[in-house]
Image (cartoon, rainbow, N blue to C red; front, side, top):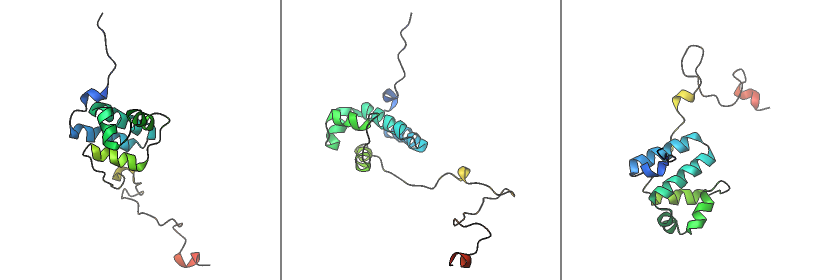
Length: 124
């Protein structure tokens, strides 16, 4: 019988474009645990000891920060991404997520007040 190994994405994260795509997909989920797992996988792919040293952390400290109970700081995440040669970019949510009006046009972005409520009515 042939031994089958469990899939490990770390074996396939061998260039910056693949790593960027992998992390991008993880961040798009918005799931903190999934993002931390993806970051940990990239760290393993790049050598967790080397990554930890570049961040000024111990190897066990990095494992702890990226573990299930960990909560890495925003600064740590930015340093981690920078150590991989990655930049962070911000963009608006996808147009697909924006609601459409009954006529099929994009619904206008509302200011938070009811459509029949006038600005002057708010100043009471």
